[in-house]
Amino acid sequence: MSKVLFVHPEGRIQEVDAAEGSSAMRAALTGGVSGIAADCGGEASCATCHVYVGEEWVDKVGGPGLDEDDMLEFTECERQPNSRLSCQIRIDEDLDGLVLNLPESQ
Image 1 (cartoon, rainbow, N blue to C red):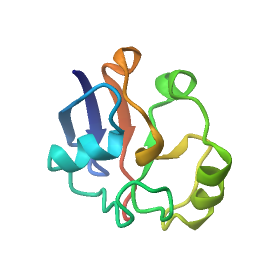
Image 2 (image 1 turned 45 degrees about the horizontal axis):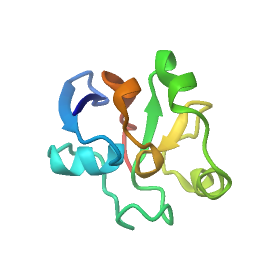
Image 3 (image 1 turned 60 degrees about the vertical axis):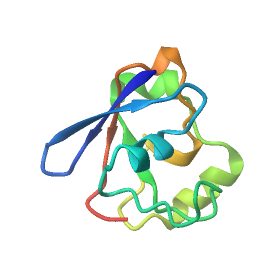
Image 4 (image 1 turned 90 degrees about the horizontal axis):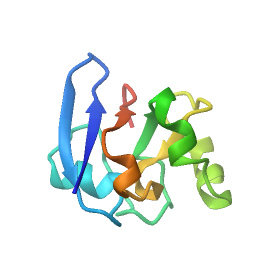
């Protein structure tokens, strides 16, 4: 199990457990994190699980794939260089303590 810290727009931090191999989106849903709609259920066919990866984690998480990159054009809040879809972030032991900032809206 790894910990993922979701930072809400007002600064509140919500820490959830994430099973290795699962997605950050699944951890958010299981952990009751509001702000992750996940309308497509993790298929990378919507942009309702958009997050901003904490700057110190960007290199460890890596960049988006081609399909994800296309979907990031449809985020409700402004896309930034550290934008990712949380359904495409796979949790492993190297991501223990991962910080994901939630946008104002999905």
